Amino acid sequence: MALLGRLIVATMPLAPKFIIRMVASRYVAGSKLEDAISTMEKLSSEGACFTVDVLGEEITSLEEADFFLEEYSSLIDSIVKTKIDAHISVKPTAFGLLIDQESAYDKILHITRKASENNIFVRLDMEDSRVTDSTIDIMTRIRSHGLANIGVVLQGRLFRTISDIERICDRLGDDADFRICKGIYLEPEGIAHTGYNDIVNATNTAIEAMLDRGAYTAIASHDYPVIEKSLKLLEKYGLSPNDKKITSPGKGPGYEFQFLLGVRGDLRRKLSGDGHLTRIYVPYGKQWYEYGIRRLNENPEVATHVVKALLMPWTNRR
Image 1 (cartoon, rainbow, N blue to C red):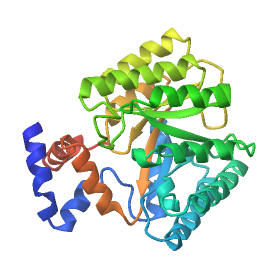
Image 2 (image 1 turned 90 degrees about the vertical axis):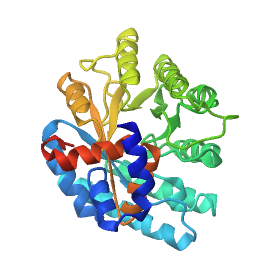
Image 3 (image 1 turned 45 degrees about the vertical axis):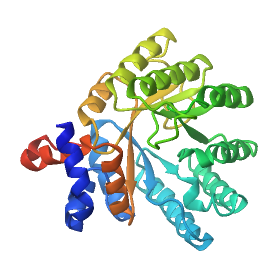
Image 4 (image 1 turned 30 degrees about the horizontal axis):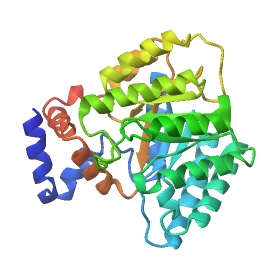
């Protein structure tokens, strides 16, 4: 099946766009805000909550950042209006981080303030290693304004992640709030683990470091070794679905599990059924084509799931 996935990925650039749309439709809510709202309303019955991402990154002009500022503002308004249990995820480069860091900071600060007024959390997605320091810097600067509704993503594969956890926790204490994932960016061997087992082990080590420091820990993984280790760590640190330690509106008792839309819905529903807070990462936007291609290149196994869904559509539950 792995070979089949790689073969499919190799031919995708030659495929008609409607084929890519068929692939992306499982992992992207749609091209419009209304599509994201509709998707979340349908999935709310499964006990999940959400974090919403407007697709797009690495803009080429600051004028493009204005679109994301307006779109995220409209997204917050829609979340409030529909009363959906949702937060937002932001890619700093979509606000011009690689063009003008101060301008990007001002726009993200504006969005965070509006989100705070509506009890909505803002997660700064972590992109490639070029922007690790500047992304963390934006989060800590916004926190210095008294806004506690913002946190950052860290990637287990990077060698620096443990020191980043320690540094952020030293500054923010128990208010530190992370999403931890393996990381999708293929970084050089000099700064990151590259083998699967090494990445999994490093991610598990990072999860324990976060829990040990009392930080809120959003575990974003579809890997069974990470999920199984996390459950053991939660037991070790006395965290459970019945814990009354709720850090802020829409959050769990010190931790939560996160899944990409369309991936491992069975595992997500199992964790939710056991009482754990589960959150679905819901991307939408006009750049669905680029996102679909990227998801395939990152993980060729996705292609085999698509083939299975086409041949056996009854298995295609998000």
